[in-house]
Each structure stands twice: as structure tokens, then as C-alpha cells.
Image 1: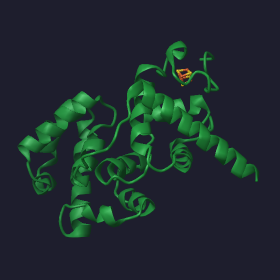
Image 2 (image 1 turned 90 degrees about the vertical axis):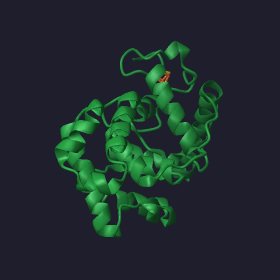
Image 3 (image 1 turned 180 degrees about the vertical axis):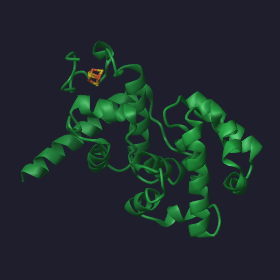
Length: 226
Ligand code: SF4
């Protein structure tokens, strides 16, 4: 009974947060699904960099190697040179090459359309079996490319969900991912994900959050305390 009451309260809270953020940042709808392999590479490139630099790196890579087969066959240094604007190219280049080869070895070609048929949990298990693919990357591929109801927890959502009180203060990334995915109801994952990131970037910043301007300050357990 206790679990049911907590769960119901938290679901109500999540829906309220979604509504307030949608009023402030917009009601976003996922329309066009991207190619899952492209989404996977794009998400790996996004690690520890800005969206602008990620896009520069991705576009340079695709201009030099229009087919994923070419990336899989390319020398690591050539990949590294193309994705340099995205940072951490020495880590990301061999990771991308290795994953593309692993996909080809498993599927016979570099194609992840098998994800469309999988349930979210199966998709998560499958994608995280690749070296260097964590829950956040896997969730981004499933949500953005396949339209599955999976809620990715990035660095902004990890911080804000703890401050608000949705996730336990001591939770690690994996636990935070599990908690948020048990709380977010179907149909709002895409909008809430993007709007929570926007909140984290603009208002609930790592240092000196702007609680006075925050649309969630009446329901946040950390409001005006940081
Ligand atoms: S009220 Fe303050 S701490 Fe809470 S979510 Fe908003 S900005 Fe972050």
C-alpha cells in the first residue's frame, strides 16, 4: 500500500513538472525518427561537448565517409581527425570504429533496424552489450531513433532530478536512470527529456541555480537552498 501511495504521488508530481515545463519551454513532439546507427554515433560524439561541436564532428565524419561501412574500415587516425571538433577524439574514434565493427559482426551489416522490433528493455540490453555504450546512450538511440518510451538521464537531468527530489541524493547514474524510467509515464518521455535539459542548462545550473526564476520552485525540495 505504501509503495502504491508513493508511486501515485510521484506520478502526479512528474505530470505536474511535465505540464509546467511544457508551458514554459514548449510542447515538443518527436516527428522524424533518425537512423539508429547515426543516432548511436551522434550520441557517442555528444559526450563531454556542446551540441554545436557534436554536430560539427558528425557532419565532418559523414562528409569524409558517407557510408558507415567506410567508417568501420577507416584507420582510427582518419576518424580521429574528422571528429576532432567534438573533443575526446582519441577515445571516441576507436570506440566508434569498434562498435560499428561489432554491429556488422552481429548483424551481417551495419544496420540497427532490428531495434524497431525490440521492447525497450530488450533494446537497452542489446545496445549496452556494445563496448562503451551506457544506459544514457542506449536510451537516446531508442527514444530519438526508434520512438520507444525510454527516458535518457543526461548530466542535467541527473542533477535536476536529485535537486527536485525525484531521485535519491545518493543514487548513482544507473540508479537514477532506473528511478526516472519507473516514474515517467508513457507518452511524455521525449518532451520531458528535452525540457528538463533546457531547465538544467538555463535555470537549474550546476552552480548558483536561478530558483527565483524556476517554474518548479514551489515543488522542489532544494529551492533556494543551494
Ligand atoms: S527550484 Fe532551484 S534547485 Fe529546484 S529545480 Fe528549480 S532551479 Fe533547480
